[in-house]
Length: 109
View 1: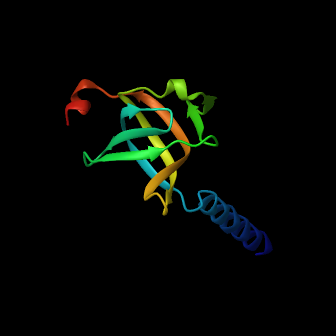
View 2 (view 1 turned 120 degrees about the vertical axis):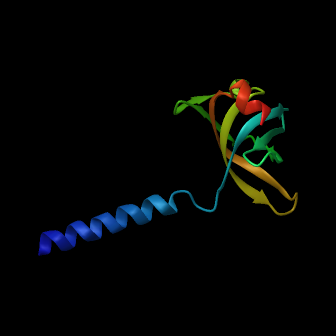
């Protein structure tokens, strides 16, 4: 009985920690349509254009390995963890996961 209680508490603790690790970040997914030194524009699943500010502290990853902003290219799929900057009324990127290039069929949608 004690083993089950300890196992249960450890499981709950682990899951709570995993949920809190993401904080208040918003996850934006889409295909890159424009890149500048300060912003990236993506087209999300609904076809809406979303502009996200890039900060000096923004981290870039590709296949879970750190990369530079140079890997961020038009047509590439991305997942962006961002915070809403209430003053600017824009998202500010914390982390960008860079994926693969979108297929031609997906890009036409």
